[in-house]
Each structure stands twice: as structure tokens, then as C-alpha cells.
Image (cartoon, rainbow, N blue to C red; front, side, top):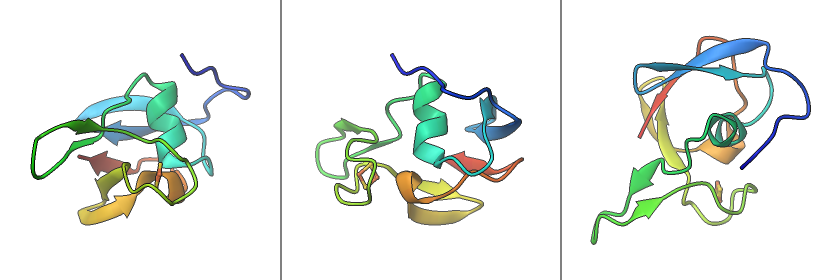
Length: 86
Ligand code: FES
């Protein structure tokens, strides 16, 4: 669904899966470009959520980055070798 404008120049790890990314792009953009559009589930109903607004407003993109939870994937710039999970 999403297509990169520039080619990836590094990789990151999402749930033990290595995916291509571009340093400096948002983690959410990297995940979406890799076809990962569900990054968490809601606490109450278990409904899937994924990046939506891409500008830090909706909080649907909350993930764990390098062991730190509740990070907004759309606000976190990719660093080569980064590890993230739901
Ligand atoms: S996509 Fe909305 S806060 Fe990240």
C-alpha cells in the first residue's frame, strides 16, 4: 500500500523480524513500508491499532523501542539496528 520515495539504507528489528528502513525516517513509516500496519491492541477490547495520524496526535502507534514502552512510533526516528515491538 505504501511505497518508499527513497531506498532503505539500514535495517531494524520488529518482533524478531528484520525489516528494511531508512535512518531518520519515522519508525511508523518504516513499519508501514514493510507492510506492518497493526502495532498494538487496545487494552479493553483487544482491537488492533496502527499508525494513523503520523503526527503524534492519535496515539494509535504506541510501541516499545529499545525496551522503553509507550513510545509513539511516528515520533521516533529510525536508527540503524533499532529494536522495537508491540
Ligand atoms: S500515528 Fe498518531 S500518534 Fe503516531
